[in-house]
Picture 1 (cartoon, rainbow, N blue to C red):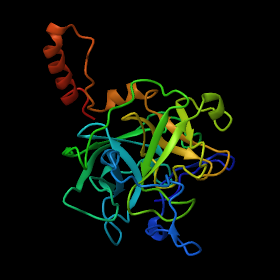
Picture 2 (spheres, helix red, strand yellow):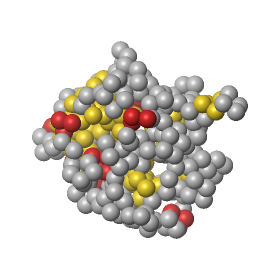
Picture 3 (tube, helix red, strand yellow):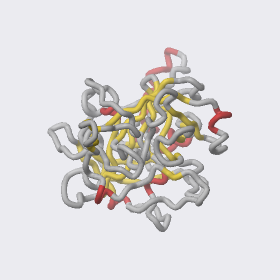
Length: 304
């Protein structure tokens, strides 16, 4: 997959990466330690977030399982993956054909296929209709799966959409298989990074795009999303709040990563995905009928 074209003065997107030189870890011979700084710096002993994460890949591996990963995503229903729009375009800015894509869930280790691994083909590719590769506006998209994922609660799970705009200071975690440093190799095991939502006025010093939020780590500026993390979730308080979009390189000082704001785009997401939100505003006697109507709507009208 080739890089997304951006302006010379524009922050680089967290784009699809050529994996030919990225399927290994980085070892520092000076101190005998592996460094995983840019995509988060740590792997929790018990990872409760990786079950929401999926790997978006080519329909067939190049040489071995997982070497074709180019973007992340998260499951928002049994049939829908939320990701970034720029992940779904080729170098000529043509939408990738569904037959060229597959989604892999239940695989914390990108290069290891296990009994929990689920591989699914794609039925529909739906980038936001107002996405701009030039400005990176509306960098959000959906993949409708050909089959259904089977959530098990341990390796595969569906994550709720954020129901409010994120406030400055909110603690979040980005997770993915992105490069462990700028233009570096991709890790095998998913890596987490703790980030804090920044005030809008701070974000506007880098980019004034509407519908975007930005985040960084106030203690370790190296903690950031990077190439290969694109489309992956920014998770706050158990909800997906952002989708990895772009930044000025990876983990640079006095910078920040940008994420498509899920709540800002929530109406578009729900119109185009079988998410079936709970209609808690119905009077109690009508709740059963309301839920039945919502299920029917998701199975019928909302089909992509």
